[in-house]
Length: 258
Ligand code: BGC
Image: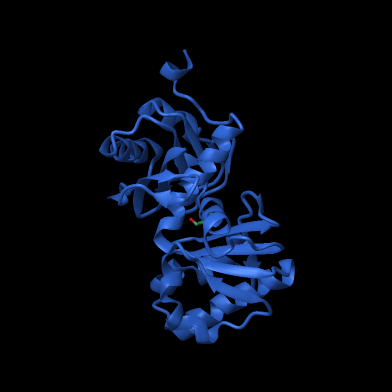
């Protein structure tokens, strides 16, 4: 099935059509910057521009950087808090006219890795950690996702882990790779202590710089890099969209319901 995967982020919104049977993008991604205040209406305009760019009329799957339940955003740490309680799927479907599903972005990226990337054919507990402005996490057991895990916000040393160990923290505090790597290592070890994963997959933009901090990472489990890096968010959003459509959970815009 062809689905337009859209990765909604705090600095950019990007999308591409994806063949969900293979996890392949069918065209190069199209990216637009996220509007300054990151409010819902302005961001949905941008999402619609991406939909129009691909002249898309089929289903859409969106990855969103916060908790999402039944298409409604329940948190949005790095966006306007106007998103909280906002029915993202319904508003996007209304604006674009396309059946829409919305999920947490790290869950979406994790799904791409587990179905077609580093976690393919792996059993056991897989923890995917995406490192970017936020710290995203996705938790799988034998390929099944536990949605909205939000382990980026566990408290370590009395502080929110994301505030200390995200890439935004590295930039904000101008940390050396050593200093940041040590913090991130503490974060990963805390997750290992809590979850004993069989495999950790590191994704998100900063994972592509792994050679700069790998020497500071020492965890009692296997650790691998995501295969799809930049594309995982888009591909995963489309894959999640496919699953949601199959379950008849997509939100349809008013015209297509009649
Ligand atoms: C959010 C998560 C999201 C992650 C990556 C965090 O701040 O709480 O839901 O997955 O950022 O975007």
